[in-house]
Length: 276
Ligand SMILES: NC(=O)c1ccc[n+]([C@@H]2O[C@H](COP(=O)([O-])OP(=O)(O)OC[C@H]3O[C@@H](n4cnc5c(N)ncnc54)[C@H](OP(=O)(O)O)[C@@H]3O)[C@@H](O)[C@H]2O)c1
Picture 1 (cartoon, helix red, strand yellow):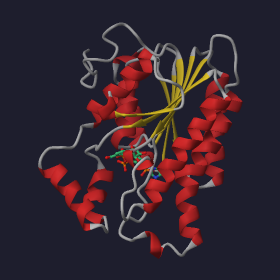
Picture 2 (picture 1 turned 180 degrees about the vertical axis):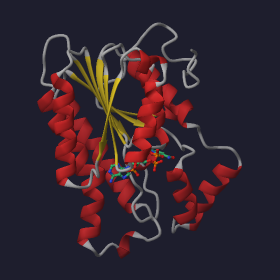
Picture 3 (picture 1 turned 60 degrees about the vertical axis):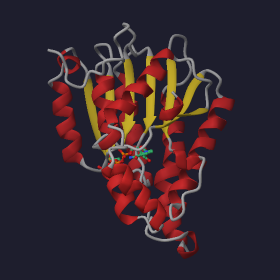
Picture 4 (picture 1 turned 180 degrees about the horizontal axis):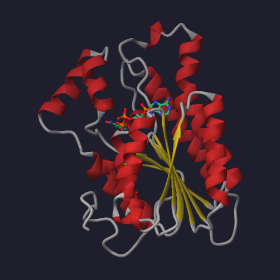
């Protein structure tokens, strides 16, 4: 069966991720869901997916869809972890699930994709964020959990001969450029980029990439064009939408997977869809 999600550029030259454990946060919808479907086609039998999000029903739908694909029929194992990554116990549960997934497989590749993210309250300006708990809750999910999860996963998959380890941070132009009324999002994305640059410096044997996927036609974009407090920004997102300027998740995913498979990027770098 020819899978409908199979991108024309990826995998066509015979490259794949081998037998892997692939962890994707925010896999229930949008870019994360698309990544899961396309990566599934690039995994060797016996590979394991660990898919994380809060929406268990959507994760299980995806699990069923994957099971029906060529990869699923060839023995891809998918584990769903329903977790709120802003909550300590949930992050620990994700790591525990990954530990269990790791115990019954001997793999060539670890692929950890930090895709889950949120905009925070973009209907207000920086000067209104007086509530420390609100700011901490945002950073806990969007920044702190990415570090704790990475550290937990690297503990499970420590360095060994023949194991390639790759960590992808789904970033944004907002990591580099200030967007008015997006103080939490810009702060979080900038912090995450630096976090993964430090990781790349410290761990030369781990491949680390921050990838800005471009403006994607997802629920996050709906929120951007309806809720941004800054009128100019709100308008530019609406115009982008009405004039067909948004990318499909498949387009952006395809570029990311090409970069990962080619494996020539400097570890720790920030790459944007439009740079490639
Ligand atoms: N869309 C864009 O234009 C754009 C542009 C640049 C960068 N990005 C980045 O690309 C990534 C994916 O964005 P998207 O557009 O696909 O967003 P989306 O459609 O809003 O999906 C976000 C994903 O994150 C999960 N998530 C949200 N809160 C969570 C939590 N507390 N715990 C665990 N999972 C949580 C959601 O699942 P549940 O709700 O089920 O938990 C969902 O699967 C994000 O990192 C985003 O910042 C997006």
